Length: 164
Image (cartoon, rainbow, N blue to C red):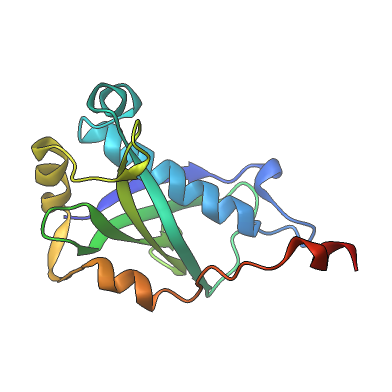
């Protein structure tokens, strides 16, 4: 299954070039995920009851066609990667105009965390069931090893470097 969420592009969603700003793409993806979770009965209230929350660890984008003010844009959501227990997931979002023109693609890799312990956790069965509905035959099985393949790793520096 594919989930779709519709947006009307507002003036405040634009950048100086008068097309959809990069920050708006991020916000549209996040809102699409929240709409998906609400539809699947795992909205903010339910997540609070379960004591879990979704955390995006990496997000990347490819842009193909500009999106302008007063246009309608439809953002899809598919799960193209997920660990066996659904603690790790990867969403793919595609941005379309109402006539089906594909304008951009986003990929967001994340985990579920226990809100008290602030550590990765396995979500309740209800979340696993909902996520399973949006997997395809091409959905890959992810593991913690997939985090090592993300493009960036922490690289701490000596704070004295900031005052040089």
